[in-house]
Amino acid sequence: MQQTFNTFLTEAWRAAWDDGNVAALDALVTDDYVRISKGSGKGADLVAFKAEIRAIREGFPDLKTTIDSVILDGDHGAIFWSSTGTHTRPFLGVPPTGRSVSTRGSNYLTLSNGKIASETVTWDGGELLNSLGVRHLGDALAAEAAADGEQKVVVDTMSGEPDPEVMKTFNRQFVTGVTVVTTREGETPKGLAVNAYASISLEPPLVMVCVQKTSSTYPALFASTHLGINIIANNQKDTVGTFASKAADKFAEIDWHAGPDGSPLIDGSSASIEAEIRERFQAKTHTIFVCRVRHAEVSDNEPMVYKAGRFYDGDQLSPL
Ligand SMILES: Cc1cc2nc3c(=O)[nH]c(=O)nc-3n(C[C@H](O)[C@H](O)[C@H](O)COP(=O)(O)O)c2cc1C
Image (cartoon, rainbow, N blue to C red; front, side, top):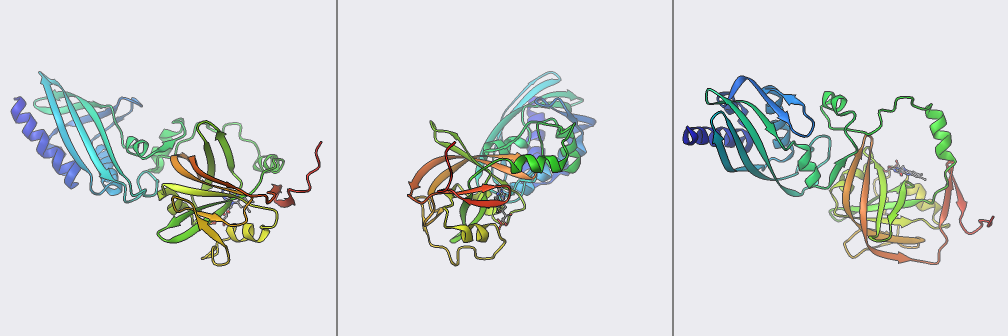
């Protein structure tokens, strides 16, 4: 029984996962097959399982899965497996990172007449993103996300939502500097103005920036291993205008040099860092990049100040 089942399983598994021939699963599972996620407790039928395989193979076209071992005991069993693949196309709404991942998991089976009637799985496709350093903020709206066909998940359900105008006014009361966040797409420097910058910790030196997914810089930024963050100086108002625009070549009139890992650092900035992107938190319309600083440059140029849509001279602040 074990030998026959193993052969049967290995062939159907390889056809479905490695070749995308999901119809091969029809003979392996019962008509009322259910696949339960150990993490969320949710069940999926064969149609949903096939859709998940297709989505994973779409995002990781070179996906290869190996069954490491199968243990059977009567009508119960376990499969231990491992997979590798390269994230070359969008997956769960996340743009390609071009990176390879390895993942492993186990499925606990209940068999009926030699077919899989149900299985509890320790793994879901989101783990591929975890392996790439992409995190989703909580799971309160996972059901809504699934309905959208995208895994966009937030912690807060936003019940009792404040008026957007009040939120806008609240944000306008907050004083920040302005940064330009940069990366490279091949040899082409790219960047955008960002005031959603914060230092996270000094030890280790972690910082974060928050970037909207509709930004034209976003796909290159998402795929990058490193980024540059330039704190804009008093006399760089034109530079802010350029990087807040959608201009095709924002660097045409900009003097810059490359950081040790290639990120564009803008000459004349008040300060610049180059940081390695460690995590990419998906927060609905934006991604929060958590980065470890690898290189820093500080000049004597005073920083520009930004409040409520206006720019101020950072050298003219009067102490309280
Ligand atoms: C002062 C200022 C702060 C900004 N802060 C952010 C920010 O924190 N995150 C963001 O995604 N966009 C921010 N923007 C908007 C982008 O810079 C703007 O949408 C830009 O056109 C994006 O360019 P891109 O689509 O070529 O990447 C800011 C703009 C300004 C003027």
